[in-house]
Image (cartoon, rainbow, N blue to C red; front, side):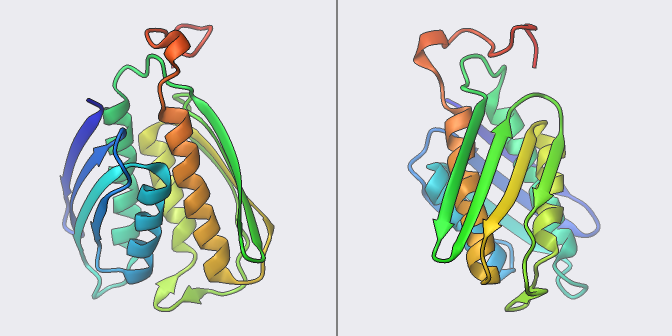
Amino acid sequence: MRISNISRKTAETDISITLNLDGTGKSEIDTGVGFFDHMLTLFASHGMFDLTVKCNGDLNVDAHHTVEDVGICLGMAFDEAMGDKKGIKRYADKTIPMDEALTLVAIDISGRPYLGFSLDVPAKKVGNFDTELVSEFFYSFVRNAKLTLHINKLAGKNTHHIIEGCFKAFGRVMDEATSIDSRRADVLPSTKGVL
């Protein structure tokens, strides 16, 4: 089974994550940051991942370390759960509408960390959540999951809708790209023979 368990403790955060790539979309998310919990719940649901995230962070400072470090740990969890990556589809892209917002997310599980991020949002905060932390989460994720991710806003005026569409699309591309292609279940999806 493609399951991982990640624990990471620093002076700023104490995080534990359990991930099942072949789940049913069940999640238990508790980071102490309400909007972020909502986004990770959407990610797990749309990606059909069983995901448990528990984070005790220095929220007395702000949410930066919590969001960044959860990105690190979630990236590590995906990298571990994929194992040798044989048979994965590797590529995926989705364009997701959320009312007036339209977001495109594309991925290559390439072994090469890169984030192309063009998610211009009109507001600096959604509730108490600093919207600049969205990019911090994804930068941390791609470095540790070792993949290429592009996120582009095609349309949108409502910050909540834009970010929500992004996380829904992110879940769906991760689901597709990590899924096993039965036609080559024992083959690494690279002509180089390495990812």
